[in-house]
Amino acid sequence: MQANSIKIQYPEDMSLMEIVLTTKRSQQNIYEVAKLKQIIEKGKLLSVDIKQFRKKRSLDANAYCFVLCQKIAEVIGNTKEYVYKQAIKTVGQFEILPIRDDAVEEWIKRWESRGLGWQSEIWRDSTLEGYTTTINYYGSSVYDTREMYILLEEIVGQAKELGIDTMTDSERRELIDKWDSKGV
Image (tube, rainbow, N blue to C red; front, top):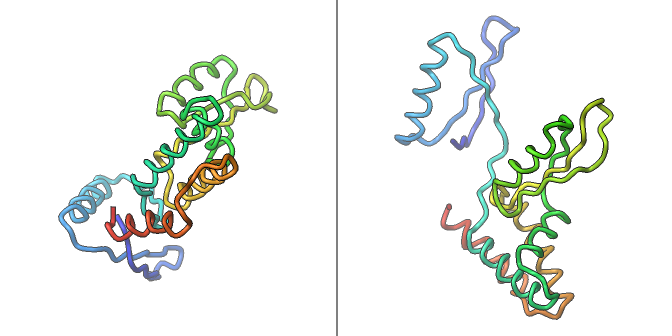
């Protein structure tokens, strides 16, 4: 759900604060708010996470990413999957987590089962006894526009270094703008 304004109100009990969000009236939003209201009415708490809205990246940008990965792979004699995974490791989003020593192998298997870009590897011994620190890269399927742009620029840079023709800066911006205007 997207909000286009936020208001803070203070009820008589000054230890409390009310946050009022304004959003578009749609069947989906009405349904979601009604479900949340039912949870509150049952005496349960909600966990709320409010953050800046970012549109998801364009599938056209994603397709272009893999076209370039394939062209790079042909020049370097490897696979498009290798090129993509290396780019993810170079500029992609990641999380560092301590995992119990006896669960590391299963953790890596499950993390990587999420998709091609999802990579997990042992980074170092943890400062916690009985744990190993892993570095876990997210696949681009969960990237927002900014994150995907950074990944695409890394791949474009590699392609240019190898003499592979790429879209111009304005053509790449047009991919993002075209997607933005669709409101995908």
